[in-house]
Image 1 (tube, chains in turn red, purple):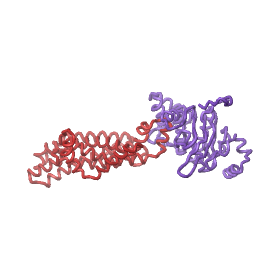
Image 2 (spheres, helix red, strand yellow):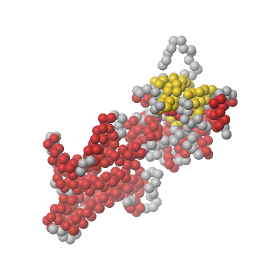
Image 3 (cartoon, chains in turn cyan, purple):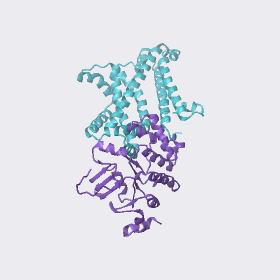
Image 4 (cartoon, helix red, strand yellow):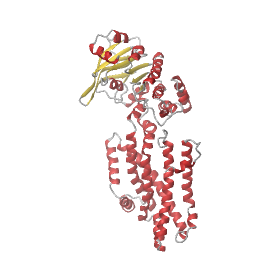
Length: 261
Length: 256
């Protein structure tokens, strides 16, 4: 998973290697988003002529993943903290949210936000915003459980030490508990983001023109499903690979004790 | 706080911590039973007793890591209760050193020491780090300031933990079996730091099994038995002129 980490000069420190990997992989992600039309255009029919459409779909998929991924992380932290709060109604609200989201299909949630929500609240979202909202709320529920597990895994002595130094409960969480909990929660969080990248294809049902939608459109127009779906799957593989390189490097950066090496 | 008109003239140094009839239950088990005592400024009080005698629980009640069920505790004139302002004020003045060190593993030694002054006292970063290095130098760890806890031995970690507490300039420091998790060859480096602290006039309440430290450094020994404060005595009386059979038995067991 951390293949890129091994490519850097052996004299570099763990932090230098992981920083370099994060920068390189992030640059790669931007390049994929901007320039993917160029290598795709070199491919034979039916991919080459549709290169610009595939590139546009890739950008939408990446954007959708980034927007819902970041909001899902924020929602996850808030829901995890709420579920561990001393105030019971907060715990119930967080429990209800996680129970409802994990207990219903994502497809139903995407359709609900797009079709049912506008009838209940006077806000009309675009198809992209609807998909981002549904995906963010969905991944947030799974993130909440990963982060909650991370918080519970931090020894109670850590909070006791911080509190007895005079740190407030909030500062204790921000400076002491959360950094350790995040490191523990990172592998399952990465799982969730990789799943999110692939689940973003469900935005297709409400008309978002993302990568899967493009694939289906091109195969419907050309009647050549084999090369089209190979191309679509390959692009997803490139994206998940870049994503796991970044997350692996973040993990390595947080791994102060170097137990993973 | 308690100004009773008929009270005797104040002692030469005022009590820093007053404990009156304090009890603590865990479910049906009473772990601390009606303890009354006072801790004075510049005093080193050493709490001894068998495992499970309630001495650690008693110590942890002094900064409310455990809540007491009955009685009252006053620290530096502030009543220890559910009022978070009281609690924050008290915790700023009371340092605590734990058996398991409880250093923050994601921070360097220097950052461990500088964190609370920066966050609680709002000391600027550069000044907090300079002060932290000074304190680490005092406990003999200037060369290890930029290491993370996992790179340090147990004895070094506990010295960092003491430095971390000292950085807040506490009026009193609580030690909860500070050498019990250490390999034998590392115990002395921690005890030496504690002796230096005692000589500098720090008020200390120490729960320990190190009887030589208690005898050498302690001004007063408190013996806990089944949650009760069975005896308070100066070390000479406690160790060399002990009349209580239960304590004689305890001292006989640990001297072997």
